Structure formats: structure tokens, C-alpha cells
Length: 220
Length: 303
Image 1 (cartoon, one colour):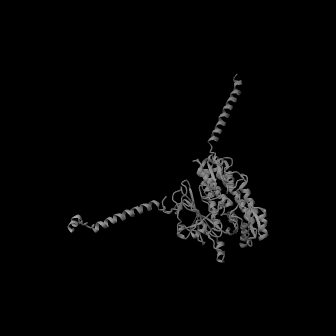
Image 2: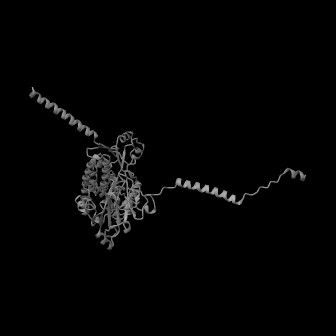
């Protein structure tokens, strides 16, 4: 009986896989998995937000007191200034803007609190800065009044003229000009150089659809 | 014989000259760019008319009496849109009826001018600080109920129309500048009148959040918005809520809308002692070139 059993079953010895081969196989499987995950990530990952706010930018909805109104007024002045530039070939100075009754350069078109601004024009190679500061408000602030952004710069850049100050945003390709409004909570003297490095904040629209890609590097 | 021929020859030459001259004029007229412009709201119609004068056709998308908030487009409106070169829209919620129309339209050459693009916007009242919490900010769509905003939007429209018709661009810009000057003078006159008032003890509320842009440019602070929706008859409960809000905000002047019924005005006055004045929403009535300036002047007078 034992002999019959011994003859009916055959003992087969299976040699175990080499540990090295097992590890290699597992590594290949894991690599394939990581590759698949990576490919899927590239496929579905959100694109880099090129219009994301930079450290030197501030959204217009963060402006307080009457600063939004001055900001709005400066934005509204851009077209009149660029039209004059296109027609005359040079940037209009403050006296010309006053003759044209253009707010905020003429205080009569603004509420009382914003009439104390003095404006200066500073011309660059391909751009112009209209720098305004409000000494009256700064004095009142010391006496406990609400804080207000006291210095503003309206910068208009002619993008077709060659070298321009950075950063800037180019909207549509056909746009010749780009405008920026910079604010500073303090009264600061106007000086050449990068506004961002001197504590100025560039006011951008809170409406994301409006903002474009900021170009920071130099080159024309 | 020669003498007799001379007057006849002169006549023939004159006739040929006239014929050639008028043909050339007609040809030039034909070649001249003439845009068909559509406006989704009353102010856009007025601004476009003031910019282009008689050099383009301006039409309204919806009929004069229709309410843009609740308007349902008709097949005839689609046909109108198909024949346009340009359509001027609000783009941030005041002319929602136009969105499905623009999606459905088969007019590849139609240029859409979104007047809110590039405009500094004010968040909806009470939502000013939504961005602090990272929430999506809702913007006030009544960008056209203000003079400063109107000037900016109009200049943008003039620039875009000028790109479509470069020959007409100088005229459009000249007209836009002249109209801007007119509007600025209205603003200056309003500010002078406000300067003479003592607003220290005044707490102002509006029935709905449509006038923030206008109040901001006049330097007037709005303490409360008592009923954010408009164009809706208030129920007894809503009226009670409005009265509570007015009392809570200690408001003494309330600006409502022209179509706000007198019985509600009387109830509010009786319950709160708050005076109610009416402002125009500038989106109802006949479409005319002067509509915008007339309506905004009425609003300034009411203030």
C-alpha cells in the first residue's frame, strides 16, 4: 500500500526565485506605476497661473477710503493722455492736462478730500510718470485722520518705442500703450529707478479677467 | 455754326462732369466704413450714438420698455444680432440675456465690446472683504450709473470702434473727447452743489446696490443697502425687514428707484421717519442719444 502511494505521487521541488530577480521585478512594477502617475499628473495638473499677483502688486479692492476714487480717476485719464501723445508726438504736461480739465489733475472734478494733490510730470525714454502727492492729507493723518495712500504714480508706457521700464503688462497685441498705477502710503520724493524696489505697490484690478501676464525681465 | 455749338458742348461737358463727380462721391460713400452697432443697455446706446454721430448705425438689442434683468430673447432679437458688426455689452451680470444669444449666434465677424473689461470694479455691498477669506468676489454690475466710469467705458468703446474703422477713428475720438468734457462738467457742477451741503449728520442707504459707483465719485458714503434685489415688489415680510434694517443702520435718507411704489415710500417714512428719494436705474425708456446724460442729471438733481 505504501509502495503504491509512493508510486502515485511525484515529489517536485520548485527552486525559489533569486532574491535579486524578485527585487528587480518589484522595482520595474513600481517604476511603471510612478511613470503612469506622472503622466496623469502632467495631463490633469492646473497650468501655472501666469497672472498671479506679484509681491509688489496690490488688488484695487484693497484700496481704502477715497483712494479707489483717485485710482479710478487716473485710469480714466489714460485715454485722453495717449490720444494727445499720438496727436502731438509728446506727452502732455500737467498744465496741458489742466487746460483739458482732466481729473485728477484738476481737483475740481474730485470730492473735497482728494483736492489737495499736487502733480508733477517725469518723462522717461518711452514712458511718462505723472506723480501726485497729498501733503494736506499727510498732515491730517498725523492728527489722527484715517490713513490714505498719499502718493500716486500714473505710468504710461509706449510699447512701440523700444526700451521700456519693467515690470509691465501687455494686453492685446494691437495695444500700443500700457498703463500702471502705483501707490505709496507715505509722501515720498519721486526718484528714478525701479518703483517696486522703493516700496511702491502696483495697483491691479481685482477682476482677474482684466490682468495679463507680467513681464519682468529686461529686453526690448 | 461754331458759335451755336459752343453752349451745347458746354452743357454736355457739364453734364458729364456732374455725372463723374456724383459717381465718385457715391463710390467713396460705398467704400466708407459704416458699422452696425448694437447696444445691450440704454447707456451704451447713448454713448455709441455720441461717439459715431451719423457715421454708423446704432440699434438696441432689446425693446425700449423691456427689463434687461428678466428679458427673454426673441427670434427677432437673434436676427438683429446676426446683422451687427459690433455689440456693446455689460459683461458682468446686467445683461445676462445676451450670453446665450452670443453663444447661439452664427456671425463670425461680430465684435463684442465688453465695457467692464479694464474697468476698476466695486464689490457688491457687504462683500468687500470676501477676498480676505479667499472667497470669490462678486462685483457690482452697475458700472454705467456713474460719470467717471461712463467716460472711461466710452473712451474704450471709441478706441475699439476706431480700430474697426481706422478712417473714422479720429472722428470717433474727437466726439468721445467732446462728450467726455460735457460729462465732466456735469460732475464738476454736482460736486460744487454737494460742497455746499452739510453731510455730517446724514446716514444714507440705498434700496438696492445700484448706485455705489455714483455715490463713490461724489464722495458720499452709503451706510446700508436695505434690499439688494430690485425690480421686485416687496412682500409684507420684506418690507418689515427693510424697515428693521433702516432703523438698525440709523439711516435718515433712503434712495430708492423711480418705480418704487408710493405706498411703500409712505410706509417706510411713517415707520422710520426716513426720507425717500428716487434715482433712475438708467435702463428703461426710449433709446436716445441724450438718454444717459438726462438720466444721470436727474439722479444728480435728486441727490
